[in-house]
Length: 305
Ligand code: NAD
Image (cartoon, rainbow, N blue to C red):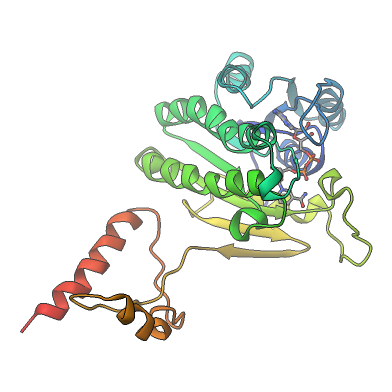
């Protein structure tokens, strides 16, 4: 069965180019009404240009879809509120929020300026909060919502010269998990995509040996996370170069001792780090509590006669 988005209103940030454009086009082609948000700046996040957002709106409308442009920046609380208000003002609701806007500023860790650190965290991480906060309130009130936040391989594993980006992309995992937990009772679900595609963000990288890696190989995973039938929350989907996978936080079984010395840690290291048979605590209904229960359980088991 074709999965459609008729009567759904979606906000996609950074939808004027690259991956966001692809998400907006896919959702609109499947019946969603889309707020195409994009400030239209440079890769570093400087400047503004209404052109990219209005061009994508033009493409959607020309194909018979419905969309409006928003050129506010996600980097401020007022901008985030204005983006969500565009959906509410124009269409009276918000069902889907995809926070995808992004910029890049590279520098080695020891030389990274606070200006470059803040400029990237402001768009990716604080930007996520600036749009999630107002959208989440509406979604909970309506009893329906689909949130997709954007992390990165750099957020999961780090990368050279992008401390700002890695911090921000790791941070969205925490925000998504809290939205998943607090939204669960109201049918508001939140997940994270870890995408990669050859867009302008690949500028300066030699992609000549890459396999096909277009944004159209990522958009279906995001579309599924944004769909009514999405059956997971508080999870992470990886989508790049034709591979879709789940990334997750796992823990080793661990070692229990009633007391520890530094030497004990060293002596038990192999078992502490043994990733065979890992533990994975689902965020929802309560990964936090399940984690604590498991640790307490090991202690309780050890003291039983
Ligand atoms: P892109 O540069 O092609 O598109 C990003 C868009 O975000 C741009 O059109 C830009 O104008 C917009 N934007 C930037 N700052 C904004 C702001 N303050 N408010 C509103 N819009 C703003 O980049 P892309 O490759 O399509 O990346 C999209 C997302 O995917 C980003 O979050 C990026 O970090 C993430 N990502 C991309 C890759 C990749 O391989 N391309 C890999 C991992 C993660």
